[in-house]
Image 1 (cartoon, rainbow, N blue to C red):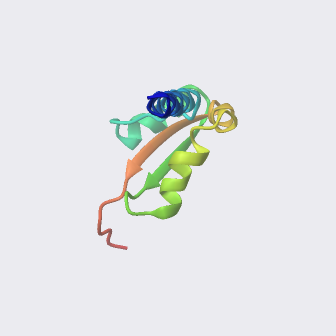
Image 2 (spheres, rainbow, N blue to C red):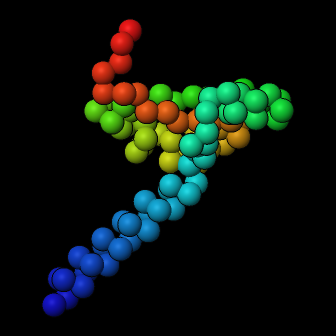
Length: 93
């Protein structure tokens, strides 16, 4: 019984830590066209940072889970208007 309680408490703590990290990380603008993000950045006298990722991309997954949630990344991103965009499964180059 105690073992189950400790496991539940551990998972709850891990979940709370992940949620806290997500709230402290880079705030991406989503669901807006690039032209709107560029206009918003220009009005705020900021650069535009565009993260183009793919769901199958290993380094993209790493950046999403390990880099962007960090407070240091959020601090740097305050100087930018940050946008995320997904690559199609097969992009023509």
